[in-house]
Amino acid sequence: MLTAIDRGPENAMTLGGNGVSNSTTVWRQVQDSQPGLRIQLTVSYMKEHLDQPLRASTLASVAKMSLPHYFVIFKRCTGSTPIDYFIKLRMERARQLLATTSCSVKEIAGVLGYDDPLYFSRVFKTVNQTTPTQYRSDSRLQKSDSIGSGTFSTGNPR
Image (cartoon, rainbow, N blue to C red):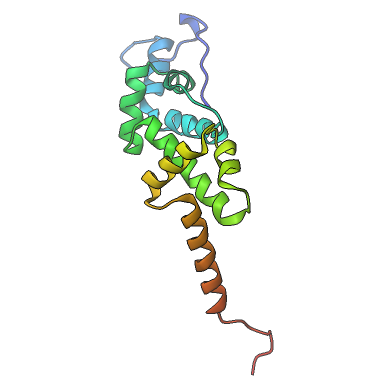
């Protein structure tokens, strides 16, 4: 992560030999040239807070951007809005938990910050075109099919 301290004009950098020596301008150019890194930072923040409601203003603050600028840059970098992206991350985690644990749908909803398991199920179905229960059933069926059709080696070449 980049940080900058403005120590005054005596420690400023010179830009392109044109005599401009303003460290604030240099810092602003560094910030503007790397918006993707700041968006990545907010995506990491989202992943760490899947169980909590997030405010767009918090994400913009993490990115050190104004809210309108954050929305524009986020959409440019990810192709979706911050809330849609956050829901997508939550649903990815939900699919993972459904496929790998025996937690109930209600428990998974709670782990992902949904107080209402029915609302969680509606969101899950909207994103995945299937219910959480059906997804779990299908993923287990696929897993058993891949195990049953796999080729196993005993380690003894013939």
